[in-house]
Image (tube, rainbow, N blue to C red; front, side):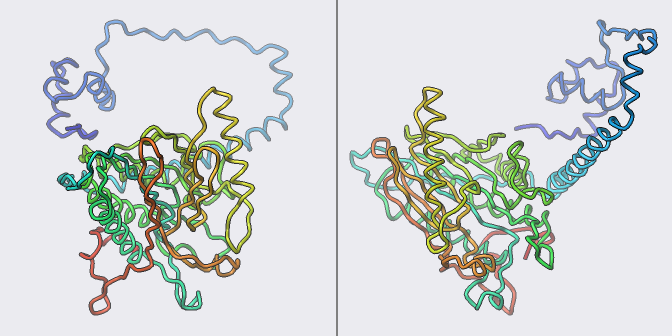
Length: 435
């Protein structure tokens, strides 16, 4: 089992004993010699290195005429200092917020959820070849509140409804994999497509977000970790691929950045869920800094992105045809230039509606969303669509086969005496629940 990064008092006492070498510390604590060396550095102890070098201070050299002349442009350098200092201060604020967020979550969260036992599906597969199951899970917008009395009675979404719809999705996927297919399934590929939390973008709203960023992060993390744990009992292996959305970006960013796109609250959420599921050996995470996720399923290449880069399209059907065409074309050129095959399947979210568009090598697939009709869609005149998520199978020869748009509108929040029944969904620590 992986050692905790925090040293216990007993381990610290071993490290403080000057009679112990790094090898002794590593043997007595079960840690590496490198970790032992870093521990003594943190304790302020001088490392015992025979080859330590003594820094030699060079004599001070008087400035040259050219250097003095360069410093004469005082106004220019003052301006440069202001620009750089502003960027530095902003980086400090962001870094401080991230450290507090992750640190507090680590203190309050359990080490990890226990894995669910794997129960092989009993299917009469005959001579058919095993397939993979793929679930597109995106645009949950945890923390968003949609009031029926502000959406003509047609909209309604909050944290209890998120939990109900996530449980409904879990039951739908379980039902399909156990009752609707006679195909042997070797793995489940889960694609987390971004906008998993609603973030803190005001969009000119009079009031701020209904749930704090920490509550969104904490509540979504626990619910999604339990979601993966429950599905892990159905297949011997789960692969998780991720991309970040545009809503959880930092509030000072007017649009998604072109660099360091991964530095986003969705990414912190993914890292948190990964930590909560690290004892589940059948769940394999693929988390990196890339703006998009590229992966193979049964020999077919998949390209996962959030979809906020798809601009244009009509509001009646909500299909950005030209942007989709440009994306398929540009990727064909990009991969062709590297002498590689272009993706067969492009997976995106963001548009909150299920769309499938064919192209020469496969399909462009748009996932639905969790919230359903909201004030933004109502004011913008977008056609109302039901909350859905996409699930399909992948065959090693035929590619995408059986496809299901799992409608979440039938999920119901159960109440007793005006309070939500928690055991109907997932157990989220109440002190930081967005409910």
